[in-house]
Amino acid sequence: MIHQLKDAVPETCGGKAGTLGALVRAGLPVPDGFVIPFGAYRAAFGKCGTPAAGAVRDAVTAELAKLGAPAVAVRSSADGEDTSVTSAAGQYESVLAVQGIDAVLNAVQTCWASLRSRRVAAYRAALGTGDRGAEYAAMAVLVQRLVDADVSGVMFTPDGPDASTAIEASWGLGPTVVGGTVSPDAYRVDGSGEVSEFIADKQLRTDRDGAALVTRRVADADRGTSVIDAETAVRLSRLGHRIASVLGGAQDIEWALADDRIWILQARPITAALPSAPSDTAAADARIASPVGLTGTPGSYGTVTGIARIVRGPGDFVRVRPGDILICPCTDPAWTPLLRIAKGVVTETGGVLSHAAIVAREMRIPAVLAVGGATELIRDDTAVTIDGSAGTVTVVPA
Image (cartoon, rainbow, N blue to C red; front, side):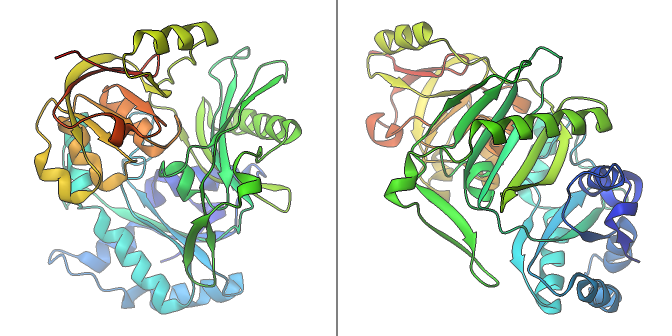
Protein backbone atom coordinates (compact mmCIF):
# COMPACT_ATOMS: atom_id res chain seq x y z
CA MET A 1 0.00 0.00 0.00
CA ILE A 2 2.77 2.47 0.97
CA HIS A 3 6.37 2.56 -0.32
CA GLN A 4 9.24 4.08 1.60
CA LEU A 5 10.97 6.75 -0.46
CA LYS A 6 14.25 4.81 -0.35
CA ASP A 7 12.48 1.92 -2.12
CA ALA A 8 10.63 4.01 -4.73
CA VAL A 9 11.09 3.18 -8.43
CA PRO A 10 9.48 4.86 -11.47
CA GLU A 11 7.48 1.78 -12.49
CA THR A 12 5.31 1.90 -9.35
CA CYS A 13 5.90 5.39 -7.95
CA GLY A 14 6.36 7.67 -10.98
CA GLY A 15 9.36 9.56 -12.27
CA LYS A 16 9.61 12.19 -9.50
CA ALA A 17 9.48 9.76 -6.57
CA GLY A 18 11.47 7.10 -8.39
CA THR A 19 14.31 9.52 -9.11
CA LEU A 20 14.41 10.76 -5.52
CA GLY A 21 14.45 7.14 -4.38
CA ALA A 22 17.55 6.55 -6.50
CA LEU A 23 19.21 9.61 -4.95
CA VAL A 24 18.39 8.40 -1.41
CA ARG A 25 19.95 5.02 -2.21
CA ALA A 26 23.04 6.86 -3.48
CA GLY A 27 23.37 8.67 -0.14
CA LEU A 28 22.39 12.11 -1.38
CA PRO A 29 20.55 14.64 0.86
CA VAL A 30 16.81 14.14 0.20
CA PRO A 31 14.11 14.90 2.84
CA ASP A 32 12.51 11.85 4.48
CA GLY A 33 9.24 10.64 3.09
CA PHE A 34 7.02 7.93 1.64
CA VAL A 35 5.01 7.30 -1.53
CA ILE A 36 1.39 6.36 -2.18
CA PRO A 37 1.96 4.33 -5.37
CA PHE A 38 0.05 3.97 -8.64
CA GLY A 39 -1.82 0.95 -7.27
CA ALA A 40 -3.50 3.01 -4.56
CA TYR A 41 -4.66 5.57 -7.14
CA ARG A 42 -6.12 2.87 -9.39
CA ALA A 43 -7.84 1.16 -6.45
CA ALA A 44 -9.27 4.46 -5.15
CA PHE A 45 -10.68 5.59 -8.47
CA GLY A 46 -11.68 2.24 -9.93
CA LYS A 47 -13.84 2.23 -13.02
CA CYS A 48 -16.41 4.67 -11.66
CA GLY A 49 -13.86 7.48 -11.24
CA THR A 50 -14.86 8.22 -7.62
CA PRO A 51 -11.94 8.79 -5.25
CA ALA A 52 -12.01 6.97 -1.90
CA ALA A 53 -9.07 8.01 0.28
CA GLY A 54 -10.24 5.78 3.18
CA ALA A 55 -8.34 2.86 1.69
CA VAL A 56 -5.03 4.52 2.50
CA ARG A 57 -5.94 6.47 5.65
CA ASP A 58 -4.53 4.04 8.24
CA ALA A 59 -1.31 3.50 6.30
CA VAL A 60 -0.73 7.23 5.82
CA THR A 61 -1.49 7.91 9.50
CA ALA A 62 1.17 5.40 10.53
CA GLU A 63 3.76 6.86 8.16
CA LEU A 64 3.15 10.42 9.33
CA ALA A 65 3.65 9.25 12.91
CA LYS A 66 7.01 7.73 11.95
CA LEU A 67 8.08 11.14 10.58
CA GLY A 68 7.01 12.81 13.83
CA ALA A 69 3.85 14.41 12.36
CA PRO A 70 5.69 17.41 10.85
CA ALA A 71 4.49 19.83 8.19
CA VAL A 72 4.92 17.99 4.89
CA ALA A 73 4.98 18.57 1.15
CA VAL A 74 2.42 16.47 -0.74
CA ARG A 75 3.59 16.22 -4.34
CA SER A 76 2.49 14.65 -7.60
CA SER A 77 4.50 11.82 -9.17
CA ALA A 78 2.55 10.93 -12.30
CA ASP A 79 3.50 8.48 -14.99
CA GLY A 80 4.87 10.50 -17.89
CA GLU A 81 6.15 13.23 -15.52
CA ASP A 82 9.87 14.11 -15.19
CA THR A 83 10.93 12.02 -18.18
CA SER A 84 13.63 12.71 -20.75
CA VAL A 85 10.90 13.71 -23.26
CA THR A 86 8.38 15.65 -21.13
CA SER A 87 9.05 17.42 -17.85
CA ALA A 88 5.39 18.36 -17.18
CA ALA A 89 6.96 21.20 -15.18
CA GLY A 90 4.30 22.62 -12.85
CA GLN A 91 1.43 20.89 -14.64
CA TYR A 92 0.34 18.62 -11.79
CA GLU A 93 -0.57 19.82 -8.32
CA SER A 94 1.63 19.87 -5.24
CA VAL A 95 0.52 21.15 -1.84
CA LEU A 96 3.06 22.50 0.66
CA ALA A 97 2.91 23.07 4.44
CA VAL A 98 0.32 20.34 5.04
CA GLN A 99 -0.18 19.04 8.59
CA GLY A 100 -2.56 16.43 10.01
CA ILE A 101 -4.08 13.33 8.46
CA ASP A 102 -7.23 14.97 7.10
CA ALA A 103 -5.26 17.78 5.43
CA VAL A 104 -2.79 15.28 3.97
CA LEU A 105 -5.53 13.08 2.51
CA ASN A 106 -7.22 16.16 1.01
CA ALA A 107 -3.90 17.11 -0.58
CA VAL A 108 -3.50 13.57 -1.93
CA GLN A 109 -6.89 13.86 -3.64
CA THR A 110 -5.87 17.26 -5.04
CA CYS A 111 -2.82 15.61 -6.63
CA TRP A 112 -4.90 12.71 -7.94
CA ALA A 113 -7.49 15.04 -9.48
CA SER A 114 -4.82 17.09 -11.28
CA LEU A 115 -4.03 14.10 -13.51
CA ARG A 116 -7.10 15.00 -15.58
CA SER A 117 -6.93 18.76 -15.44
CA ARG A 118 -7.47 20.91 -18.53
CA ARG A 119 -3.91 22.21 -18.41
CA VAL A 120 -2.45 18.68 -18.38
CA ALA A 121 -4.57 17.74 -21.40
CA ALA A 122 -3.40 20.90 -23.21
CA TYR A 123 0.24 20.19 -22.32
CA ARG A 124 0.06 16.61 -23.59
CA ALA A 125 -1.71 17.70 -26.76
CA ALA A 126 0.88 20.44 -27.44
CA LEU A 127 3.77 17.98 -27.11
CA GLY A 128 2.02 15.23 -29.07
CA THR A 129 1.82 12.78 -26.18
CA GLY A 130 -1.98 12.85 -26.17
CA ASP A 131 -4.33 11.71 -23.43
CA ARG A 132 -3.63 8.06 -22.84
CA GLY A 133 -6.90 7.46 -21.05
CA ALA A 134 -8.02 6.39 -17.58
CA GLU A 135 -7.04 2.77 -18.10
CA TYR A 136 -3.37 3.76 -18.48
CA ALA A 137 -2.68 7.10 -16.76
CA ALA A 138 -1.96 6.98 -13.04
CA MET A 139 -0.79 9.25 -10.27
CA ALA A 140 1.46 8.34 -7.37
CA VAL A 141 1.78 10.86 -4.53
CA LEU A 142 4.98 11.70 -2.69
CA VAL A 143 4.78 12.86 0.95
CA GLN A 144 7.97 14.40 2.36
CA ARG A 145 9.05 16.38 5.37
CA LEU A 146 8.88 20.06 4.35
CA VAL A 147 12.20 21.90 4.37
CA ASP A 148 11.77 25.35 5.92
CA ALA A 149 14.21 26.90 3.50
CA ASP A 150 16.14 30.10 4.01
CA VAL A 151 16.91 30.08 0.26
CA SER A 152 15.56 27.93 -2.58
CA GLY A 153 16.22 27.57 -6.26
CA VAL A 154 16.84 25.52 -9.37
CA MET A 155 20.02 24.45 -11.14
CA PHE A 156 20.71 22.95 -14.54
CA THR A 157 23.77 20.73 -14.56
CA PRO A 158 26.07 20.93 -17.60
CA ASP A 159 25.99 18.42 -20.44
CA GLY A 160 29.79 18.35 -20.73
CA PRO A 161 32.84 18.59 -18.47
CA ASP A 162 33.71 22.13 -19.60
CA ALA A 163 30.18 23.58 -19.61
CA SER A 164 28.75 25.72 -16.81
CA THR A 165 26.19 24.91 -14.13
CA ALA A 166 23.30 27.41 -14.21
CA ILE A 167 21.77 28.29 -10.82
CA GLU A 168 18.82 30.53 -9.92
CA ALA A 169 17.94 31.33 -6.32
CA SER A 170 15.80 33.55 -4.12
CA TRP A 171 14.73 33.96 -0.48
CA GLY A 172 12.37 31.50 1.20
CA LEU A 173 10.60 28.47 -0.26
CA GLY A 174 10.77 27.49 -3.90
CA PRO A 175 7.36 28.48 -5.37
CA THR A 176 8.48 32.05 -6.11
CA VAL A 177 11.38 30.78 -8.25
CA VAL A 178 9.73 27.85 -10.04
CA GLY A 179 6.47 29.77 -10.40
CA GLY A 180 8.18 32.83 -11.88
CA THR A 181 6.68 35.34 -9.43
CA VAL A 182 10.13 36.67 -8.56
CA SER A 183 13.11 37.49 -10.74
CA PRO A 184 15.83 35.43 -9.02
CA ASP A 185 19.55 35.87 -8.61
CA ALA A 186 21.42 33.98 -11.36
CA TYR A 187 24.81 32.28 -11.03
CA ARG A 188 27.07 30.43 -13.44
CA VAL A 189 29.76 28.03 -12.19
CA ASP A 190 32.21 27.04 -14.92
CA GLY A 191 34.29 23.88 -15.14
CA SER A 192 37.15 25.44 -13.16
CA GLY A 193 34.86 26.53 -10.31
CA GLU A 194 34.82 30.21 -11.31
CA VAL A 195 31.51 31.86 -10.32
CA SER A 196 29.76 34.70 -12.13
CA GLU A 197 26.58 36.25 -10.76
CA PHE A 198 23.71 38.57 -11.60
CA ILE A 199 21.90 39.93 -8.54
CA ALA A 200 18.21 40.70 -9.11
CA ASP A 201 15.69 42.86 -7.26
CA LYS A 202 13.88 40.12 -5.35
CA GLN A 203 10.61 41.62 -4.16
CA LEU A 204 8.66 38.63 -2.79
CA ARG A 205 9.33 35.55 -0.69
CA THR A 206 7.17 32.63 0.43
CA ASP A 207 7.59 30.96 3.82
CA ARG A 208 5.70 28.52 6.01
CA ASP A 209 3.59 29.95 8.82
CA GLY A 210 2.28 26.95 10.77
CA ALA A 211 0.24 24.84 8.36
CA ALA A 212 0.03 27.53 5.68
CA LEU A 213 2.19 29.37 3.18
CA VAL A 214 2.57 33.12 3.44
CA THR A 215 3.94 35.34 0.66
CA ARG A 216 5.27 38.71 1.78
CA ARG A 217 7.53 41.54 0.69
CA VAL A 218 11.27 41.04 1.03
CA ALA A 219 12.93 43.48 3.43
CA ASP A 220 14.45 46.41 1.54
CA ALA A 221 17.96 45.54 2.77
CA ASP A 222 17.67 42.02 1.30
CA ARG A 223 16.12 42.79 -2.08
CA GLY A 224 19.43 43.53 -3.80
CA THR A 225 21.58 41.22 -1.66
CA SER A 226 23.00 38.00 -3.09
CA VAL A 227 21.13 35.07 -1.54
CA ILE A 228 24.12 32.68 -1.72
CA ASP A 229 27.86 33.23 -1.74
CA ALA A 230 30.37 31.86 -4.25
CA GLU A 231 31.29 28.96 -1.96
CA THR A 232 27.66 27.81 -1.79
CA ALA A 233 27.30 28.12 -5.57
CA VAL A 234 30.32 25.82 -5.98
CA ARG A 235 28.89 23.37 -3.41
CA LEU A 236 25.65 23.28 -5.39
CA SER A 237 27.53 22.73 -8.64
CA ARG A 238 29.51 19.83 -7.21
CA LEU A 239 26.36 18.26 -5.82
CA GLY A 240 24.71 18.70 -9.21
CA HIS A 241 27.58 16.85 -10.88
CA ARG A 242 27.13 13.96 -8.42
CA ILE A 243 23.40 13.81 -9.14
CA ALA A 244 23.98 13.86 -12.91
CA SER A 245 26.48 11.02 -12.51
CA VAL A 246 24.01 8.92 -10.49
CA LEU A 247 21.14 9.56 -12.92
CA GLY A 248 23.18 9.29 -16.11
CA GLY A 249 22.77 12.72 -17.72
CA ALA A 250 22.29 16.46 -17.33
CA GLN A 251 19.61 17.30 -14.76
CA ASP A 252 17.10 20.03 -13.85
CA ILE A 253 17.33 20.08 -10.04
CA GLU A 254 15.21 21.85 -7.41
CA TRP A 255 17.05 22.46 -4.13
CA ALA A 256 16.65 24.19 -0.79
CA LEU A 257 19.12 25.62 1.71
CA ALA A 258 18.24 25.50 5.43
CA ASP A 259 20.77 26.31 8.17
CA ASP A 260 23.51 26.09 5.53
CA ARG A 261 22.54 22.51 4.60
CA ILE A 262 21.56 21.76 1.00
CA TRP A 263 18.56 19.51 0.36
CA ILE A 264 17.56 18.04 -3.00
CA LEU A 265 13.81 18.28 -3.65
CA GLN A 266 13.56 17.10 -7.26
CA ALA A 267 15.68 16.05 -10.23
CA ARG A 268 14.64 15.36 -13.80
CA PRO A 269 16.32 15.22 -17.22
CA ILE A 270 16.69 18.53 -19.05
CA THR A 271 14.22 18.40 -21.94
CA ALA A 272 15.27 21.57 -23.84
CA ALA A 273 18.50 23.56 -23.91
CA LEU A 274 18.81 27.01 -22.36
CA PRO A 275 19.41 30.04 -24.59
CA SER A 276 22.94 31.36 -24.33
CA ALA A 277 23.28 34.44 -22.15
CA PRO A 278 23.86 37.46 -24.44
CA SER A 279 27.15 39.31 -24.13
CA ASP A 280 27.22 42.86 -22.74
CA THR A 281 27.83 44.16 -26.28
CA ALA A 282 24.92 42.19 -27.70
CA ALA A 283 22.62 43.43 -24.95
CA ALA A 284 23.67 47.04 -25.60
CA ASP A 285 23.08 46.61 -29.35
CA ALA A 286 19.63 45.14 -28.61
CA ARG A 287 18.68 48.13 -26.44
CA ILE A 288 19.70 50.53 -29.21
CA ALA A 289 17.72 48.56 -31.80
CA SER A 290 14.55 48.45 -29.68
CA PRO A 291 12.39 51.61 -30.04
CA VAL A 292 10.91 51.05 -26.56
CA GLY A 293 14.18 49.84 -25.03
CA LEU A 294 12.69 46.66 -23.56
CA THR A 295 15.17 43.95 -22.70
CA GLY A 296 14.93 41.03 -20.34
CA THR A 297 16.21 37.52 -19.75
CA PRO A 298 16.40 35.20 -22.77
CA GLY A 299 13.97 32.40 -21.90
CA SER A 300 13.35 30.32 -25.03
CA TYR A 301 14.95 30.36 -28.49
CA GLY A 302 13.44 32.02 -31.54
CA THR A 303 12.21 35.31 -33.01
CA VAL A 304 8.55 35.99 -33.84
CA THR A 305 6.27 38.92 -34.64
CA GLY A 306 2.66 38.99 -33.52
CA ILE A 307 -0.08 41.00 -31.85
CA ALA A 308 0.56 41.88 -28.21
CA ARG A 309 -2.14 40.64 -25.88
CA ILE A 310 -1.99 42.01 -22.34
CA VAL A 311 -3.04 39.22 -19.98
CA ARG A 312 -3.10 40.11 -16.29
CA GLY A 313 -5.16 37.15 -15.10
CA PRO A 314 -7.69 34.43 -15.99
CA GLY A 315 -10.30 37.08 -16.80
CA ASP A 316 -8.27 38.02 -19.87
CA PHE A 317 -7.91 34.47 -21.21
CA VAL A 318 -10.93 34.74 -23.52
CA ARG A 319 -9.27 37.64 -25.37
CA VAL A 320 -6.26 35.58 -26.49
CA ARG A 321 -6.29 34.52 -30.14
CA PRO A 322 -4.04 32.04 -31.95
CA GLY A 323 -0.81 33.77 -32.94
CA ASP A 324 -0.93 36.41 -30.20
CA ILE A 325 2.10 37.20 -28.06
CA LEU A 326 1.25 37.06 -24.36
CA ILE A 327 2.41 40.05 -22.32
CA CYS A 328 1.85 39.23 -18.65
CA PRO A 329 3.13 39.85 -15.11
CA CYS A 330 4.04 36.15 -14.81
CA THR A 331 2.53 32.83 -15.76
CA ASP A 332 1.38 29.89 -13.71
CA PRO A 333 0.49 26.33 -14.77
CA ALA A 334 -3.17 27.26 -15.37
CA TRP A 335 -1.95 29.29 -18.37
CA THR A 336 -0.65 26.21 -20.24
CA PRO A 337 -3.61 26.15 -22.70
CA LEU A 338 -2.64 29.72 -23.72
CA LEU A 339 0.96 28.69 -24.42
CA ARG A 340 -0.41 26.11 -26.82
CA ILE A 341 -1.90 28.81 -29.11
CA ALA A 342 0.42 31.75 -28.47
CA LYS A 343 3.34 32.65 -30.74
CA GLY A 344 5.46 33.78 -27.82
CA VAL A 345 5.40 35.07 -24.26
CA VAL A 346 6.84 38.06 -22.37
CA THR A 347 6.75 38.19 -18.55
CA GLU A 348 7.56 40.96 -16.09
CA THR A 349 9.20 38.58 -13.60
CA GLY A 350 10.72 35.11 -13.61
CA GLY A 351 13.90 33.28 -14.45
CA VAL A 352 15.13 31.05 -17.24
CA LEU A 353 14.78 27.96 -15.01
CA SER A 354 11.13 28.65 -14.02
CA HIS A 355 8.32 26.29 -14.99
CA ALA A 356 6.92 28.72 -17.59
CA ALA A 357 10.30 29.02 -19.32
CA ILE A 358 10.80 25.24 -19.35
CA VAL A 359 7.35 24.66 -20.88
CA ALA A 360 7.91 27.43 -23.47
CA ARG A 361 11.14 25.74 -24.57
CA GLU A 362 9.41 22.37 -24.78
CA MET A 363 6.64 23.91 -26.90
CA ARG A 364 9.27 25.73 -29.00
CA ILE A 365 7.83 29.20 -28.59
CA PRO A 366 10.12 32.20 -27.89
CA ALA A 367 10.03 33.70 -24.40
CA VAL A 368 11.56 36.80 -22.86
CA LEU A 369 11.41 37.01 -19.06
CA ALA A 370 11.83 39.69 -16.39
CA VAL A 371 10.89 42.62 -18.65
CA GLY A 372 9.98 45.16 -15.98
CA GLY A 373 6.78 47.11 -16.64
CA ALA A 374 5.98 45.23 -19.87
CA THR A 375 2.21 45.24 -19.30
CA GLU A 376 2.25 49.05 -18.96
CA LEU A 377 4.86 49.93 -21.60
CA ILE A 378 3.38 47.77 -24.37
CA ARG A 379 -0.10 48.62 -25.61
CA ASP A 380 -2.66 45.92 -26.22
CA ASP A 381 -3.28 45.10 -29.90
CA THR A 382 0.04 46.49 -31.14
CA ALA A 383 2.48 44.44 -33.20
CA VAL A 384 5.65 43.39 -31.40
CA THR A 385 8.70 41.32 -32.25
CA ILE A 386 10.30 39.28 -29.51
CA ASP A 387 13.72 37.65 -29.68
CA GLY A 388 13.90 34.88 -27.09
CA SER A 389 17.57 34.26 -27.79
CA ALA A 390 18.69 37.88 -27.21
CA GLY A 391 16.04 38.76 -24.64
CA THR A 392 14.58 41.77 -26.51
CA VAL A 393 11.07 43.10 -27.19
CA THR A 394 10.54 45.55 -30.05
CA VAL A 395 7.32 47.41 -30.88
CA VAL A 396 6.76 47.31 -34.65
CA PRO A 397 6.02 50.79 -36.10
CA ALA A 398 2.42 51.13 -37.28
